[in-house]
Length: 544
Ligand code: AMP
Image (cartoon, rainbow, N blue to C red):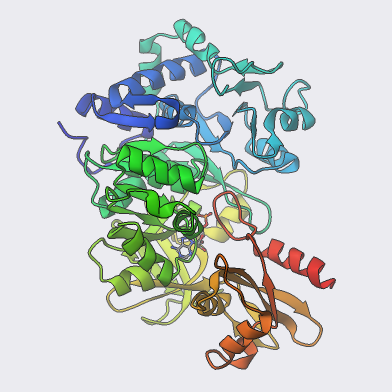
């Protein structure tokens, strides 16, 4: 038997897994080879139902917000489906948040439950939750319960939190019929997911998404990858972002694809997982693919099983796409473009597009949605080929920002068009090119400069591995162009040499006045460059 056929227009996230457990019960669904964990669709469904009943017994109501602050642990995927089954809203939380950011998120989302792990990188989550009064002090008025996911049975549950494992015992208090009754109340248009936009600028906003939004979006993106039930996806992008929980989990499961997950991104672990699990598909933001190919032992791994994947989330340099195709065997890799508010996918290249189309464009609009390019600041549609703001309308547009009608009205007009804030062109064949971000423009003495244009040029320099261009303040011009550059291993170059290289390739006013060499770029946990941080670093270094 096969997974349920499309359309998925009316399938809820909760029902999707039930369908899979009926159609392909014995197929592998979720693998964490590092932990020796392997679940079939039937096993994943039964684990999910148990946890769903446990959550109901703990008192989690339909429509209640449940914040999940954890790396890609196996419980994350279980909770994604369990919470959907009981109609609670999964609020995904970025793993790099600091105290004031999680405090803001828990308050703004009015979360009644927070589920967390002990720590990640240099942040002790439990200490942070204590510090903000989310555990032990009742300082957050809406928060009723905190649940702890231990790494293994030996990791003790900290005071003031309930162990996740206790949900199994609590489940005895809620019958399968009670769960079925709750499930029957949940429809495809109910909000079941909230994600806070990356926060590269301004205050993060909670994007409300329904099953219709994300199941369908996952389906179309997965179809674009030519997924069948024999495919295996190495899931290494964060689950708290759409890239992980929609393009990843739902893109795979709407086609019965197995997920081979790692708990957080590490280039070496990705290579090991692909080799060990014979993965056929791999996702990442451009910097992840770069890190994998720059791994010191890259050539020792057998990546022949790879076929397809998605590069997305930021501008995907042409040279990097070409390398991914030739060096990682990703002959059918696609580029996808979108944003959280659009569930997230809007465009995708086709597997059989020409190399040019797959490296120079972000593809065509996905089925069942409309795109138009308008004059920024107005809604006037532009002629084919003219750059303007990309707007999208269709099933995939978010339900709005949580508790923020003003921001919702600014983002979605009366006719349902969502403004993306991205500058794009569309050619006569429907291929879209992202030409910049409307907000990411450097204005130097009245001349508008697209950082992307300069970044593309710098990345072609033989000594440069990656580069980002940003604006710095200038008394005379208002803004000046600055570049942060990472050199390839063992390569050497000076700022003057790099400026000289630009000389005859771009107009003088576009040549970066400052070139800084960096080891790493400040990125959000979902892989977005934080240009405001580059600017801060710059100001420190040049003492301005
Ligand atoms: P997020 O909501 O965090 O997914 O961020 C969405 C933003 O990432 C978009 O508005 C774009 O600016 C950028 N983005 C996503 N995918 C691409 C892509 N393939 N090419 C260029 N920019 C992208």
